[in-house]
Length: 266
Image (cartoon, rainbow, N blue to C red; front, side):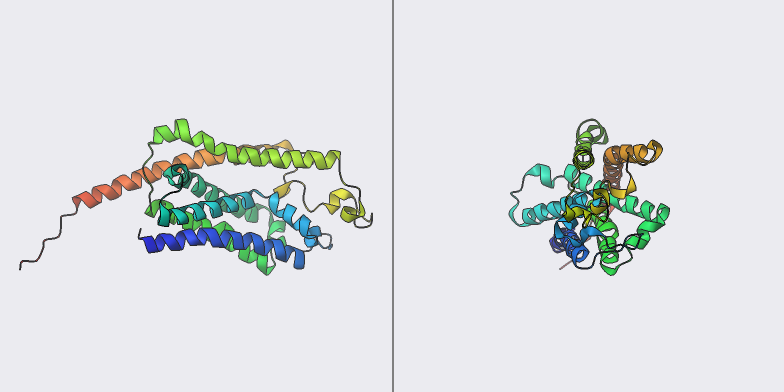
């Protein structure tokens, strides 16, 4: 892939994810959505809007994509960034993460119609299209059309792939610790209880994301989702690495089979 196209792709990975997060952050404060009971969601408090961003796995992935784009964009011009950030292993990890949030959001729209209604406002729709669909698709294009090396399938499965589960494990720990602290030491101030007209649990914008509350939902709903979240980067990363290796071999074979062009006689 030519350098001009790489600049465009990496610049997109930097600008668009940050734009999506900032757009949702500020618009959720300025023009918050309405909950099922007709009340305005408490993201109208700016700090609660920040928390509302923080607890979603897709936002963590989006920030990771932005860092990935920035590092590789800088490396295009300097070639001085750490290799572990610019080689295929990291590219595989980021691409798998992007695919995961695209698949997860698609399934959520299919099996949870209420979520579709909640994201009916224009800025949520724009954010969804850019963050959950276009950006992951561009990551896939970049991954296969600009391979950054070949990692043996066996080596990735045995050594590198397992490192990718650290990211979702850290996310799960943060969310669970936050929820446990809220349940144990829930704030009682008017700031979150809206002058004591509702409980603090209702005042907090969100405790567990994606509606998967282990204290309220049965284990057969949240347990499989938790296992998939933790191990899907490893499984999908192995698949992507395998497909990438195959495509590189096919491309190199076709290139070697192409006869060289004859130079014109002078």
